Amino acid sequence: MTARRGILIILSSPSGAGKSTLAGRLMKWDDSLSFSVSATTRPPREGEQDGREYYFRSHDDFRKMVAEGEMLEHAEVFDNLYGSPKGPVEDAIKEGRDVIFDIDWQGGQQVRNSGLAEDVVSIFILPPSIVELEKRLRSRAQDSDEVIAARMQKSRDEISHWAEYDYCLVNHDLDVAEEQLKAILIAERLKRSRQPHLMTLVRELNEEYEARK
Image 1 (cartoon, rainbow, N blue to C red):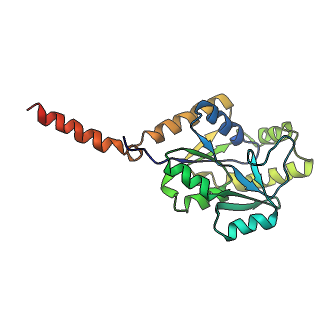
Image 2: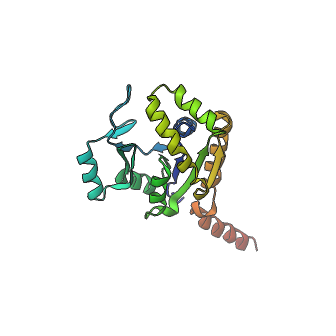
Image 3: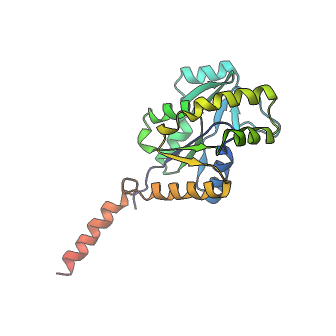
């Protein structure tokens, strides 16, 4: 059987809408999925480790990676730089492994405009309301009031890009949203264009028909 190419699963949402939690759940459901670890210039939060949540880099090191073409996408968010190292992603796709991207709409645009565009499945996660979005941000207890206010202000612009995505889910309930994500991934994997072995199978079926004559 010819191995299929992997899928780039882009998950985007405003901060607090649940994309990181849903990405984690999806990976628990299917341990063949890999997570595209981003590089960032922001300092690590308590409990975060370099190479696990992010590759933590200085501004100079990050800009050097961009200049040398080592980033698949990158953007500046709240005075910090974020980006996806290109090499590990390309290797995973060639090996038939599906990769999850937890990135914003700017990063999603860059990936969709890259040489890997045909491998992309993009999904936007919407909150059920703005009140609920702010409630979720505050419940994380990770950011100051100033940072939360900035995230809320930015959320309107982020939400305005929802129509650029292949799929859009409203995260009323994490369990329901998780099941919807699973359904999307299963359907995308079953697309005819992603099953290169079908051509061989159909040829063999036709040969069987001829042999029965």
